[in-house]
Length: 334
Length: 258
Ligand SMILES: Nc1ncnc2c1ncn2[C@@H]1O[C@H](COP(=O)(O)OP(=O)(O)OP(=O)(O)O)[C@@H](O)[C@H]1O
Ligand SMILES: [Mg+2]
Image (tube, rainbow over all chains, first blue to last red; front, side, top):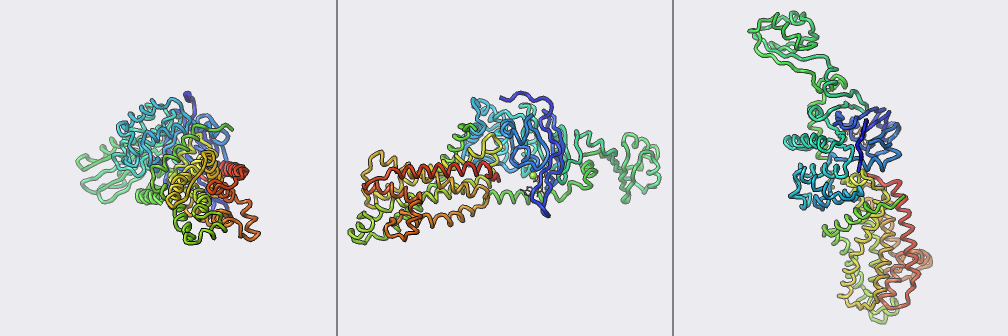
């Protein structure tokens, strides 16, 4: 139904989304400009409240744009909303299915909403692809979390969308289901050739899945590029070494390319331009039998995030995650 | 604007099937009018037949009451329609629907028609109950059809009204609050429970434009075998059409998604 898409799947120009007004004005999106090339897996990485979900709501037409322009699959989000909505799929953070119905009936319903004809064979293919075929006639409230998530992705793919939006696809999932979902996202992208826009606050998830990443915080895009482009923005490697006896810090600092030296007893953290140059020089100035252990940390998205936001995607995040997850669950149950 | 047949059918089907997969919803829909019939309807059961004939024109009060209770319970049907819409908003299902090329107006139409159809489930149950209470039925097929049609129109009207008022609501309690403001005045200022014979003039004025009155009188004329004013069916159609139009416009513009 949908032809191939050349160029950009999503173009966002100077887009703002405000909630509330006056003293309680929230700039959920603050002059966001972004181009997502067709055929990529694009990740929005940011902490709680960064504006990730808001961007998805605005692009899918669920929320109104305050200011600026956006096109999705070549159509204007504001003026051609129906055209956009016929070409996008959506996977919610909290799985949204009709629990009173079976997997096949959920697919039937989705096909009706999309006004599809001759969708049955594709539905069967999707059920097979997601290994749901043999349980497709069971009510979905008997499905496991992972199966529900898979069915939701199948629903999003049924009408052969050009772009699919996945809001925190792995939130609330255990580690092994998360791995499975990573494989699915990659597989879906390869098999069905869709552009994927996903949000996450897991750095390793963005790194593992995404061709391109934008770091978003407080409604603003702070950095954008391929994972390796982003990492090369932080021009430093971290070398950690443990020595047998105390070393002279000044001697380390004098080695060319060293930017910073920190010591804690015999544990040393050295920030260097590049470890490839530093290590030979280190071995030239320190006897190797003095070194008990040595490790090199290459630039990671972790360090990139720290660099552009001034904060770490911190340790308190997982806890807040769980709370938010439970809050969502409770809200759903009420 | 073209009608969206495919989503219309899909969403309507969902409303109907969901009802039958969820016995509680069915039970709730049927229990309340049944209670009215059983308890309220029995309040005159020891009165002499001549007294009843004098006031109600029927020797059995339940015979008089049944068309009225079926009509007033369409108000509750409207409230349930609004509650199921709020449920869809809260569970995020409204988002699932609206991130497809389905318009808010289509969602409204299927909610109004679906809830109204669901409300009619009580019709056969109530008629059966009335039979048990000794009410005789001598209706022609046309009269049965007209009676059901009148109730359907009334239900569509009230569902649309509730959906329009609660288009922006996301709180479970809102339909209940709205219902409190609508139900009592409309129920008692209609001919549904006692007939308007002994009403003060101001209540007669309300009763004369109250759609519940038209539906109750129409049904009563069938059950009691008195003269039928077929124009009432026309009034009910106008009421349903007007409310559908208002609800459609309001929902298209203001329906909240979550
Ligand atoms: N309906 C709303 N009304 C008012 N403010 C809102 C609304 N929705 C979101 N916001 C605010 O907009 C900002 C961005 O929220 P958003 O949900 O987009 O964040 P997010 O990046 O998805 O966060 P998370 O990782 O927690 O899901 C937050 O400050 C939030 O409080
Ligand atoms: Mg979010």
